[in-house]
Image (tube, rainbow, N blue to C red):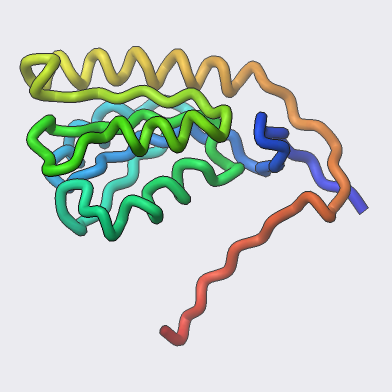
Length: 149
């Protein structure tokens, strides 16, 4: 039995080819949402557990390296207690393209959104150029959500 998917540089296979725009702190969420808005294949996600709190870094990295993700744009305000580079480095080890948009370093939110949209658009175009291939079902990883927790 086979399925159609996208092979990742780390050998895993995804069934989607999404560009992830991830606000690593909740105050970056509006900008992240606008960076992904209207770009086919892009989705914005945020969490509400602090400014790159060390406890959530493994979860952030895990979401970013999911085989359904083509590439990642990390959106930061620039005032977080932890730097985003260690997250980006872990994501890059998986072979995915990763880019940091630091709103304060860029100077203002409008410019950061414009720069982010350019990066997201380029990643989405690269993702759209990839073609699905046939893979044995043993390469398929399925996640489930427990509704009882």
